[in-house]
Image (cartoon, rainbow over the protein chains, first blue to last red):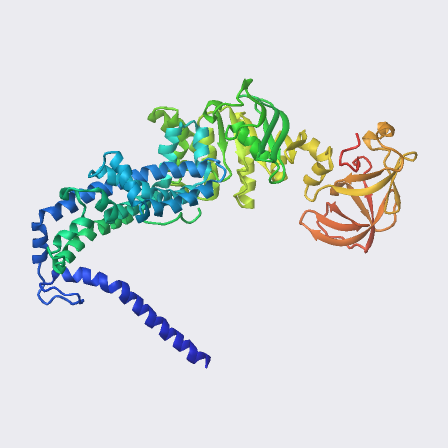
Length: 276
Length: 362
């Protein structure tokens, strides 16, 4: 009886695993396969006669190409630099300074992050950016995205900084190093893996951001890919699935490449490491 | 080269008093140990000397200069941390040379000095490695090399041997003492290990709850502890403390029904003014200053045998005297056959008397 039950549970386990893999894997498979198909379909099918025509068509859409190669890069890199730099400094201070209630502060910040870029704050954000005269400018989008990503980024960075023994900095201090030398020679090399995690994470967030650029940008030549993808819809609002999927694949690639690059160079690790 | 003077030094963290009105004078060139149980404030004291903590009150002089509120870099001190704090992303050469690099000493001289110091400390062949690739003992030497390389006027050690295994710790102890004698640099050494403090230091300060309990040479603090705390902290096993009652006229104390003569106790002459007839005291005696007899003997008190532990060159005997546990150290390599009931005779010249408040009768 016990063995029978055990077998049932292991069968159920595999059924569940297969379903879960299918649920997450099939859309990805569709995304990879469909752009090479000559015939539009929502089914996952291996193309019988693979073609690059869809990509050629996508590259003919100058507006969409510019969105991907210029606007997206500006927004994502700007956000990434801002978030990584500010988060590193803030996390460093939060981790080292003896501020009463600093944990509560970090958690509160974390909660705010979902509010800032969320739908609830849309109107105030629009008004603020309007007041600053940054409507229809990439800088406006970047600032809002930095603000939205910072709290979580600080939270992540703080975990990395907390893991570095303070005696490294104290030792450098006694050796006679200035605060800037301590940061450059001792602290920075130690937190670099953490900064890479935050950089990739904020890049991906900004790369895929839809709502904020959609609200704050007006001219079609400034829109990033997430909004420019609508140019592959017909006037009537039906999508050209082949072109949308080809464009989506191109849209995904840089993120994957960036991740692999950082992983290869620094080793991607989350939340600290093994104790020495 | 400098002396260190701590004047009324205190440090509080919130409501916790870590260091409480500490006054110490450390001579130029002296090897000085701060000894105490964990959490007694010894590391905080060291960190205040280093400039890593700001005193709540009091003054710190290093070489006659008031350094109380100076940055660590202005104090010209070198420190070896408990975890060594070798930068994992630098080679040993870069680590050892770091204090020279921030002092803008040119590369050629830097290399020369790093090589000299490293060869001197036996890590000359490891300069290309990173801290993760060398052993604990080598890491410790590298940390010492980094402290030595820039000729600071004061060395600070924060439990530098506590991460080493017993054999290595013994070796490093000799190495550190030899180095300090050679360089003649004022050294403050924090440890909770009394053997380390005794073996290394010229003078020891025993710290208890942020206060200095006693300062003196290893012999002084071992043979004449001023308080019960010092007596029971030093020695392995520590000093025996036996509750006793004083018979002032006969200059005797009563332990477990026996009379023990205390007329040879050095402070006995002035004792009339210090204690009163029939006062309850503690008799302090080191385990190696007790003789053990199988039969009833004059000036000895009876005890119940608990256990004997042969330790090679000596035998440690543990006994019960009324409610108190007493240790006796016998310098023999043959474990003796002992009856259940034995008599213990303390060496009359070594007896110390403590009052119930824990202070030596003196």
